[in-house]
Image 1 (tube, rainbow, N blue to C red):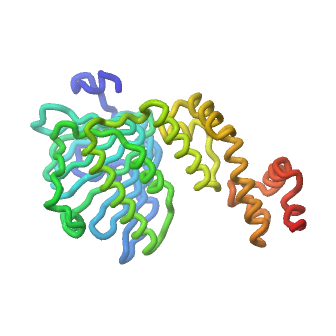
Image 2 (image 1 turned 90 degrees about the vertical axis):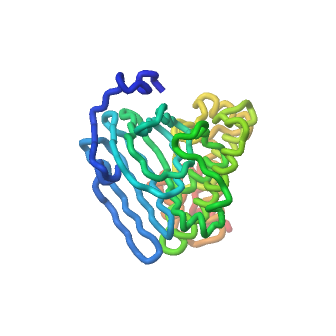
Image 3 (image 1 turned 120 degrees about the horizontal axis):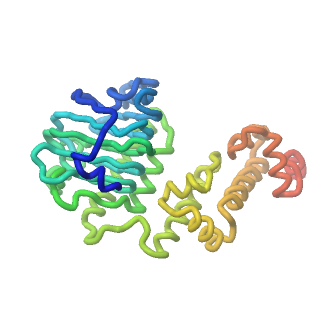
Length: 329
């Protein structure tokens, strides 16, 4: 982060909000709302005057979860005075923010691929979010009732926001669960069970993260690179219906694009695009063999918007069209 951003007297904000409200309500408008006995979801679209993107808020049982994914036109300064009583887990996947607490000696600087977990009570101060760049954050608040249900309310000592060594790197284990939270779309009881399970996983991995004697950097030698490569490989397999650029995949795991392309080919024998195509065609072949799903639907299931384009790609890969492949069975 630019050192100038760390100094209050040199930091300038174009958006200054002094209202004591929630970020999503102050800079966004509700675009979707679902409420039932099991859970509640509110999706906010960022107002064009501030930027572009979304903030999704999930509430269920004694858990509050937000997923922010936006880009602001300018830096934002949000001043607040709030009362909380919860354990807060914050994971900053992309972007920068600085938390200034009234009466504290130092600012809390959180950057790309960093996280923290702390008990939150009365909070007076401000948060500064950098504009002009992508801001992706997953934030979770767990109530005392939830901690009591889990039997950990009095069993563990959690940090306060003012404690030293608050900021930690996002480990590989945390990163995997966070990706699943971002990508999964469930409803009803499945939705609630899924989020409960993932929140518990994050809590366990974050507790272990703080127990670690040394912070683990995003990349720590060749072993970490290989872990990231296997993570990307599995991610492609699990999301066969999507298409990704090298840049998007590199940002997901924090790998340099050149390293990603070179090492992926070295480890797996295929380029990223070749591997993705191979998995798509393998998946399509299986559907052609085991189902009577129309070819255009199979095309959609593996990320092709046009059935003709899929047929051309399938023939190039197998030597015959999907229709002839199915007829031969």
